[in-house]
Image (tube, rainbow, N blue to C red; front, side, top):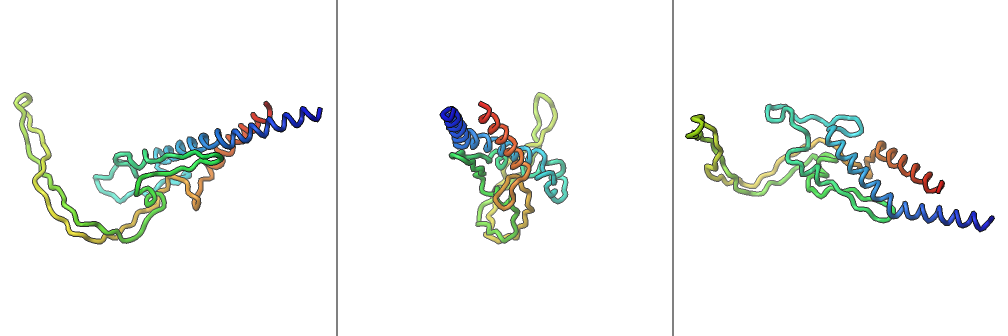
Length: 182
């Protein structure tokens, strides 16, 4: 009888080690990426909407932090035994996630100038507006004061997500019960 108990304890311990080292990191990383993607979709963090950008026709109805989707697609995770490290490889991700206030130096560069012209079509007899390059302009180096409000989309060590922690904990409890009942 004592031998059966020690065998079942070893089996449970082996199952827990396997879960900790192999299954948990991938599960936690996938849950975190889904959570981050939901934050972009909802444009909020933990139910609190992100601060809206200042008015203007150009910005009306546009999603926050999404222009071409580079920041949103930049989220990824690295699974190592016992943990999952979630990261974003985009340079400006930290500034948007934590907020930024400071002076930024802009290097001298050449700006392309564009103009519009009307072009008529032989088939439709309607004029369409086309965009073409008119030339270039040199821009001197300068400093710019920037203030980017915090629009957190990813949990950090300083500001973790209680929702994500609770959801991950719930999944771990379910899996531990399955391991014990085997």
